Length: 392
Ligand SMILES: [Zn+2]
Image (cartoon, rainbow, N blue to C red; front, side):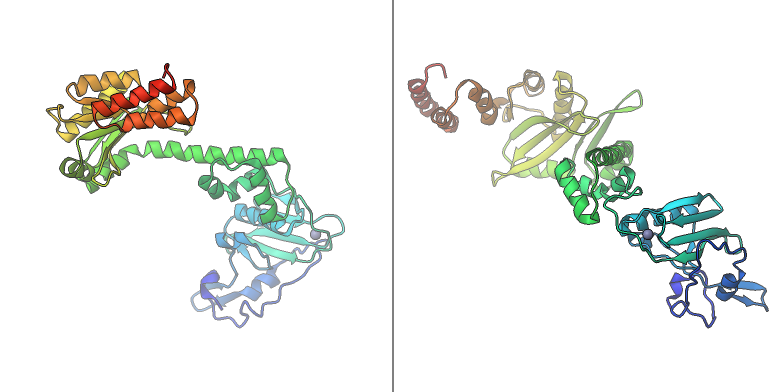
């Protein structure tokens, strides 16, 4: 006998294994369930203490609920959830004609003998199944009432966390495979909306724990920077960079900083600004990140001034800053890195270039120009480009 499964432990002869559940017709209302109680209780008269031996239903059992007489539930809510899960797993429609804080009675459809009766027991202070008939004569359903949108939302939260943009077709396929049930499109859509709400709620939670994150960030990486900007007690912006990254960059990397911003596709939006360097293996080396509400001259200036003081840059002459063709960013760079060389990212030039000049020949010529390392080579490549297309 699994002692951990029982409420308290007892030394009675009736162990759980050879306990025979009573099958009682639901029509007969047992007024007195003392027999059931007496069977499971061992009264220790010497100490005037009652020891109980009822199998308790745990949260883990919800994965595939099985009922039996004498089973106990910590709360009526747990019992209701168990009935709901049972209904969906077994694909049967269970109705609860009596459902309050004292008693719960569940029946299957007309003509099916399945029934369950549980009530609150003051002696053990929890809900207990008093009568149960596990037999069904009904046919399994393709859709049951308990299989609601909130129920599905609870089941597929993790799937949506992994793939937020899972489309309706895949979602319905997964539901059908897992549960063998057909659901309507509108129900699936409602479930997806509920899931998104939960996930977005988590985002709010994450923004709320920003202060804790900042404190931990500084504790575990001394010397790192973490600034949070607040507008009227609401999160406005934040900037952070790790000490180890800064030191590594200053010691081993070329004085090249690449800057770019990207939109955050979460509920709260915003823009992420980032600065990266190039390590000796020509790989991207992270430097600093910031989250701001909008990408404009002021936010870029703020980001760059933080970055400059973080890296301890006084003389900007040896530096090369690579950026896209954004005016706001260029203004910011001019102010904080006045002597640095500005470079435009070829990918961004190419993006604009492609809109007016299509075709692979021009495309390859553009990259050839970009890769020219001396002014003479560049001029020659540009001449070639002019031969192909004069406007380019
Ligand atoms: Zn049934």
